[in-house]
Amino acid sequence: MLTRATINDGLVSSKTMVYLYVRISFDSKVMGKRLGRIWRIFAWLLPSYKMRSAFVRLSGVKVGSGVFIGSLVMFDSEYPELIEIEDEVSIALGSIIIAHSAGSPFQARLKLFSSAPEKVVLKRGCWIGAGAIILPGTTVGEAAIVAAGSVVNQDVPPYTVVAGNPARPVRKLETRTRP
Ligand SMILES: CC(C)(COP(=O)(O)OP(=O)(O)OC[C@H]1O[C@@H](n2cnc3c(N)ncnc32)[C@H](O)[C@@H]1OP(=O)(O)O)[C@@H](O)C(=O)NCCC(=O)NCCS
Figure (cartoon, rainbow, N blue to C red):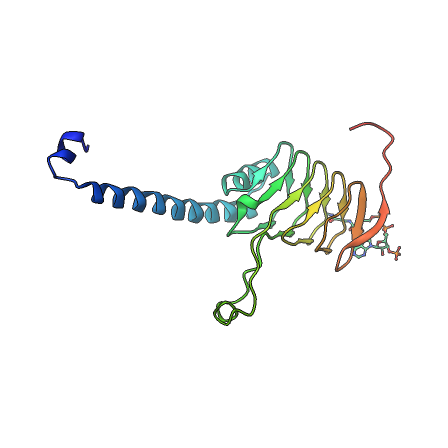
């Protein structure tokens, strides 16, 4: 253990301390991201939705309570922290939720394309149909439905069914009871 005395005695210089501090925090950040990717892969295959939700949460995605996550659902591996899933959301198998559009290294070098990562929010009680793709910067409204295979590239209003690529409203949902 490093004590003030050993530091003051010159055994460990303050420069070394700063270096070690920066190095350790960098490593734990990198490790955190790597571990997150491993948790996400477990989550694809785990047999219960509760276990899948727990592992997706571990991977850095913000997951509310009572959230159903089907198998093989893929979340952005670079920016999981930008994905927010509110309570009682249901995400069917094979859906993809993405928070960034990086482009290729070639495009980056030529400054052809760049786009900042953007938040994705799945509001309370919405349902994402099988194989849907939710793109960066979008919010799926409360209790909305995204039809199977749809591509969401703009906000989905609450209590609305959207379908197609790009996903567009096809009907409104009526409720007879209070949530
Ligand atoms: C969206 C869904 C729930 C149907 O909702 P609905 O309100 O009953 O919608 P309808 O079937 O009346 O369809 C309304 C319109 O949307 C279109 N539509 C419905 N689902 C669609 C889809 N997946 N892709 C493209 N268009 C779709 C219909 O063709 C129809 O278009 P039209 O009015 O031009 O004929 C259903 O199509 C769906 O996608 N279910 C997801 C199933 C799933 O993922 N299950 C996983 C296990 S939880």
